[in-house]
Image (cartoon, rainbow, N blue to C red; front, side):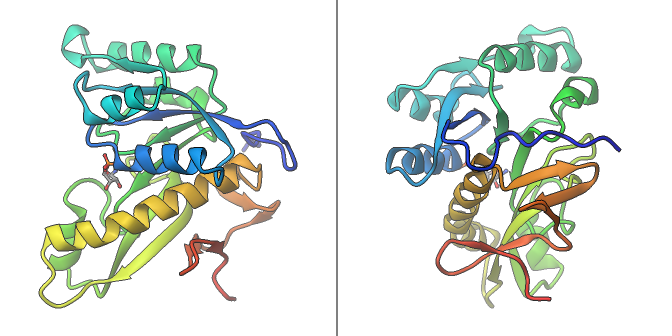
Length: 235
Ligand code: GRF
């Protein structure tokens, strides 16, 4: 396996250039925008792109004065040509890192390949549990006592790439998919911001299938603590 360069160099003072892809309401995007604005996240959001030209996420980006690109898949012959057009637009913005924040499409592996190691996703489950859709309902139906969210590197395997970090919450008796999703959302926002902060300072990288944190392999995903910091699990 070849080593994938870290998107940022440790100690660098240049903000990480990120492109965010979002299909829906954009609350995770908003968390990144807010953290960038209040100085807790050293990134420059160079583009917000969507497969839904009327997505609220694009509206949030416009209100924040960010560059946007909305492409409609119906205008393309097939999935591969849409993905190629989308990623051409993304590449033009010259990001160091692509962040999928509620981006609800499976990407063409050929389009994805050049970006592996420089593209991450936030998924609302404790991966490897509950890949795909309806994660909150499936966690309740499975009788899980804990649920959560994961930030992971994106590979051709749906929600199957190496996991960087997770936030966990208890499933409470009487939880519905909606109540669980709502409680998790705040944690998702904190998890995404904390994970991108580590990537932005060059402390996280991917080497083959292994996530490195401070140049040391992770044997388990980092865990979000009550202060919003990411920690290694105690050995
Ligand atoms: C989040 O739950 C995220 O984990 C999932 O899609 C949802 C997007 O929410 N991938 P938002 O658009 O960021 O509000």
